[in-house]
Image 1: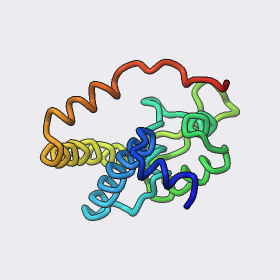
Image 2 (image 1 turned 180 degrees about the vertical axis):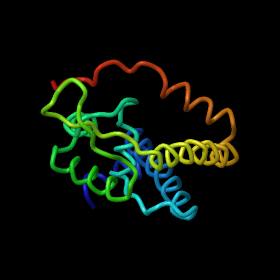
Image 3 (image 1 turned 90 degrees about the vertical axis):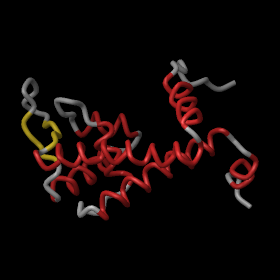
Image 4 (image 1 turned 90 degrees about the horizontal axis):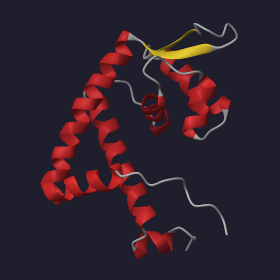
Length: 150
């Protein structure tokens, strides 16, 4: 048994939140692929979640996603190869480039938002609309900074 198995079985809130995020992510990525979109990974999905409205530098994406710049660049290259994002010159920093959605990427985001609403309805059918509303309320509250060590 690993250190993670006991909390997973014992009802750890953190483990439950991770499983819930995986449930949504897996449902979304499967439905998108079934609808004809390219097979995307969870890492690819995180690029879309963390991409600023006007674009983001790969370094900003890496920081937001908690990964190395090299890993973020690899995900961006994958998505650019699929025609979903593009790298363009930064308007105020000639040394940087911005990652932005292409028209096809914008379309994918629109489909993903609609698909997530459908998935949420499935969840409401399983745990009730009050359960979904309670989750939304609790997760939308300000949690403050993460607690520091001892």
